[in-house]
Image (cartoon, rainbow, N blue to C red; front, side):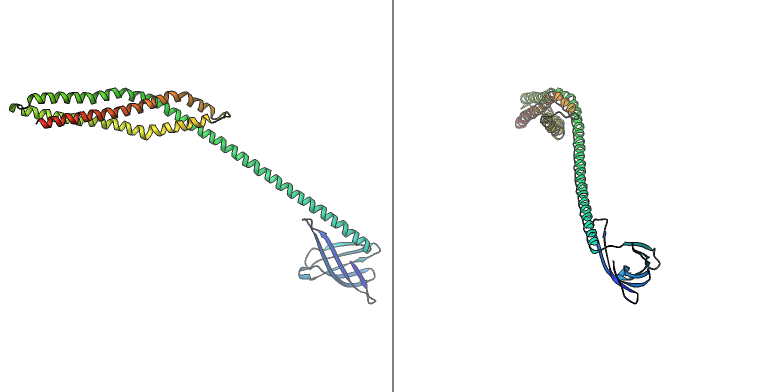
Length: 307
């Protein structure tokens, strides 16, 4: 603050203030002051209020400096102690203040950078933890999935064995019906031309028609097995083979998955054999049905021709 006193004890001058803010930047203020002096007692008006309104201060001027007390009307008063000095000291103080500002700004910037680095590391660590958690969850899910497949494989080995035991009986039914129909035809041939055997021959024709119906009825039951195999067992086999490939592609042992994969690999040979045995058996049954049905239709056609 620079003050000049006129002969009539009026004071006028300039007030400059430089303050370091919390963000490290320097806030500059420069305003004119006016007031009056009465010996060592002074009163000043400094435009520090809102919109540059004047704030009244009063104090005592001594050889040490100037002490001022004052504040906005109705507000809390403040006291300023201004030390005497020359322009060189003031400029030196500004230089020191600027250095402090630069140091503080650098420290704040470094802190921001460190905080950003820490945040990035935390984000990376969090992402890595999330990936590990997801990988573990995926492994656990796969292990449960393979375990379920193993249960289904073991059940199919049992049901497949039971189903295979039915195939010879079914094939025998087709052939037995054909053989009976052939016998009916031979009997019908012997009765051909016998006017008294018309009732017997009609019974033979009815029995041959029933034979074809019985063959188709047996085949209807076989078609139910075929549908179950196509809709349930074939997709299950695809799932098993996919799981086998995944287990085989794991170069590094995975503790969560390894036991399930080892169990799957143990069960696979017997399961695969049961699967292919049933698939082959169903195909053979279909061939047998078609062969025997054609024979039966031929026998029935021959019987109808004789009649």
